[in-house]
Length: 544
Image (tube, rainbow, N blue to C red; front, side, top):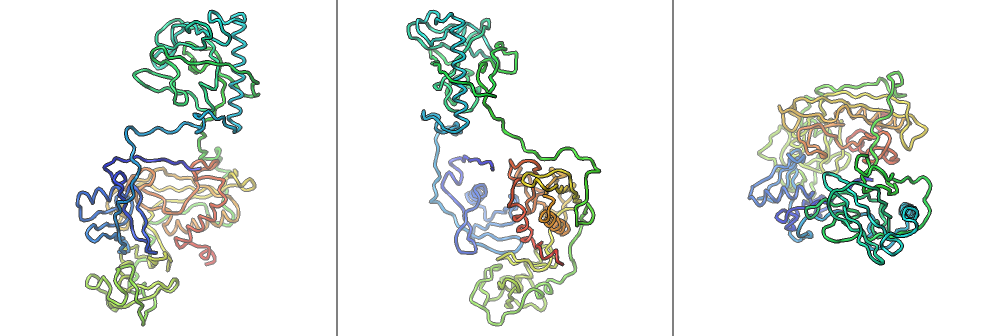
């Protein structure tokens, strides 16, 4: 399960005006930007800025409003943009609507047939029967001055919550066939009162009554209906029912009506059938250091990254020549780096000069077969890590050993004597990443600026089986290549210049899966193997 949310925007914003910004993908169709990016692009466009840098949002792109194109600041690849104004979003007048009460069918009067609602309804009926029996004993089988069976006279009382009286000091109005209880404000001595439950006042829903504020009064709101402390002579209708109390369903005690106990007086006597939102189980039970064992088949229990783990000293021309072959007959296609035709000279002619590489030379990458100007590939290489590897900008195929920009830190891994949900027959592998805050270098977005490291040390978990150990070996290899983390903008907090995950997902919940980052998840190991392969860390590396 994953949480969902909906956002509301001002009518003056991009979605309020029905404006959507889109970029052209490789297949020639158009893909919309995320809404927050659309809002940012539209604001800059309306202010007549000539360009917009999206680096602050965590994207290495430059938007040029004059040419209506987006440029990748690393590969210098350009894509067309367009601004659509025909996607109108629904406009809501007035205040932001509140979330709909659960269940949806409660307000329609149709009973719900789910097991939880059947339990709640039967509990209500049983509680009403018990309360009716208590009333008959208390009043000697009569109904006081009302002259009709089933009518309850409220006794004068005063119960305060948050400094406001919830119950009336007056009694219910008397009269034939009167089944109403009057509610108002005031203070008086508290006495016990029994209020029967009914489907009219408590429709099929496990939602507990909550306090809200309306018309200057504190009111007790049940399923969106203010039933208590209403102004004037409004009444709450009470009815009775009979039934059996299901075993194991407790009821809140009819006591502490002065408000001195943990149970609010207005809830006294209500049956308890509630669930509390569970909390994620992030860590295993406490473990002695002697119980932490090395992972079978893996040497050591710790890795450290050096400040530099890059293959320097490689000539850009040599790297490009190593992974490409020259094309004699050039096809009528575009170079997707400079966006010029391959039969024409590279767009970097006059900007980038390299001996031995002419602007009109075209090369084909060996594995994937995509073709580019050799000078464009040199420019793309110079804009990256310069680690001796190339990555095809079209299909992301990696040539050589790709390395990242992960800051220095340490990685620990060991086996713990606890099993993960979904793997009852296996112990668990715990990985602990620890990266301190520091100063960004030339390979990072803001050289010389401090970067933060939130949430470290970070604990992650794998099952201690054959596939889990294989994933661990590849994660160690990715750590050595500095691919696990990078410095950028956090998608969770929005903080920039901080250490973030680098597209290799980890499981950080040990005993639950409430956030989607835990177990059971039987597809996770296969998914993370795919993500590692996309970073150039595949199972074929284990053979090497």
